[in-house]
Image (tube, rainbow, N blue to C red; front, side):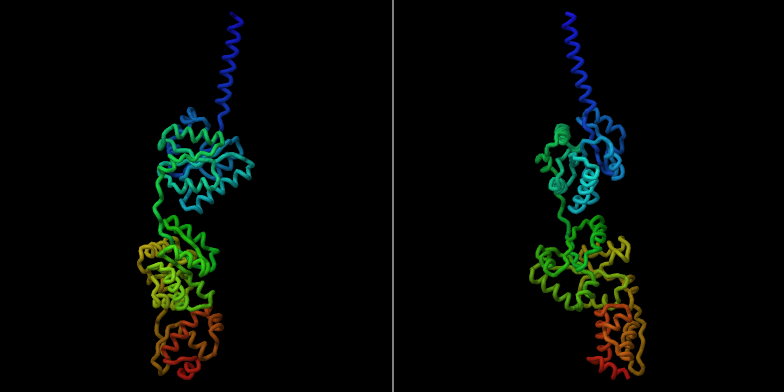
Length: 391
């Protein structure tokens, strides 16, 4: 009897020991949560309560610096809330997940990552995360059936892929956003430029840098295009030629109505803006390097509504905007300050357009615009005739 009791006790003790040991050895999961909208942040007892019933021990993480610290401790797996992404565009999702994967490599950790999905998470966010190699999804507590939550956690612990269709198919599809084509032959500053647009205006952007790629984008039916005035100078073409090419491509692709704005800088000459308005584009846009994001977005919002935008308080401050007339002796002809400077360099010093551009620190195409305006004012067709007419 005593022997049987001892055996029973040992079996019971071993069972209890194994159970306690298994409880103590629950995998540790870092929960990288949203910095703003998460119930676990508003109630400090939630995580402790959930850890009593979950098959993992959850350790919350509120940012990248805290993640670096936690990765130095015992960690078996990571879950990241979809709200951590500052934007739902593919580039932001890829950048965020890529940063997380890089940190794991640097820490020499080969552990699975799952995406925590709320009931308002967009479907394309989940599909993008799946494409980028995450292990699976975990439904967010309070939004889904507890059975589905446990299944997601267990799959992550077992390192099994887990992308249940019945969850994904219930997720909302993001409404189609207007796409803006940003045409520029130099996109070195474009990422920083478009980030603020994406967040504030909820648009998507494509950034062709040559006519072939632009033709491809226009064939997709996009109705908004911006180009940088600096590109026209680099292409050694006139504004009229540039816009004619653009209109012909749009007509060729049967794209329909195309709203066009030109990006300017604070150094853009007033006459260029005047010429742009004359050839019939819809307005200007502001370069983020010279104006605040609020000012830039004000113009962008007007542009996306299909309205023209020619802000007088900005245009009137551009170089050459001082239109105080200067009269030539006995001619009765009025020129702007900038035209007067160009006139003097042509008639008194005989400088070429290139030399005038270097002297006045403006583009050669801008000089051409001024020279054409001066010739028209004097009713002549050549520089020689201008010199003779000015005497």
